[in-house]
Image (cartoon, rainbow, N blue to C red; front, side):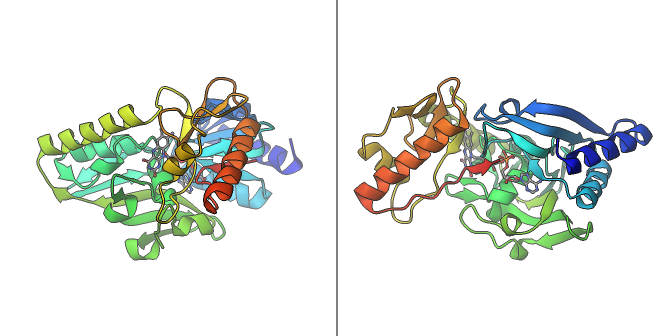
Length: 308
Ligand SMILES: Cc1cc2nc3c(=O)[nH]c(=O)nc-3n(C[C@H](O)[C@H](O)[C@H](O)COP(=O)(O)OP(=O)(O)OC[C@H]3O[C@@H](n4cnc5c(N)ncnc54)[C@H](O)[C@@H]3O)c2cc1C
């Protein structure tokens, strides 16, 4: 443990003593347990605050100790290093409420996208169908501007609330201040923790919403290798090209390094066939990039975030 992490740990113990263990602590917690890739060495501390208050208190401690940290949603777009993370991984899992009011849905950042989609379906609200099946949290979806089947988080979000990690103040910004783009948002470039988001939807017919969600889920099950651990599409879309098609045409489907393999079912996915290391995945990514550059002159950009 580094000095700053030790310092943070002691401060959390003291806080927990006065607040009924409001921040759950795991030490040397393997990150393969918390990522959809099922890859990653131990995080020195794995912390789960149970409310916005304890999350805010923790962020104050992070600022004061200068401890290295990483905020984790559902871990569906990250690759943790084999050597682990010599800092604190902070899980948003404790902030997971979802509520519907009229045609709006408000959700805390750690709520699953699935739970927000289900709330929309229950309230007969249309607009979020595209997101059904994205295995992330609301915070991860806003951060990444997650999208599928022609839809994007940016199309339905009206505002988000965040904690500024420098000033420790809570702010709410409207859609126009999110700088949303393809897998882009203001949050990728600022020190802010997303606390919650508000989505504005349109009244629809419950059966039609349910049918469209089922259709999208069915397409995922048919076309994506959901039977294996992965982090979804590894690369960003290349303008004017289909990345998966370039990888497929290059004969890379099934190409394997260690336990990491280019999916036979969907060339855009790298799957963990069993026992894959982060190094296997990174080596495979480097190889794919090299081949695609040679064959098409296209420089692929990774969508998955490598954390070390
Ligand atoms: C099988 C599969 C299918 C997928 N399909 C799609 C798809 O169709 N479309 C798509 O866009 N993506 C897809 N993904 C990728 C992934 O699910 C999305 O990028 C998702 O939005 C990530 O959310 P998460 O909660 O898992 O974020 P994480 O992977 O935990 O984190 C991603 C980034 O967001 C940051 N972050 C998370 N929460 C917060 C917060 N509260 N405040 C600040 N930063 C935060 C993290 O620090 C990290 O940098 C897929 C992944 C898998 C495994």
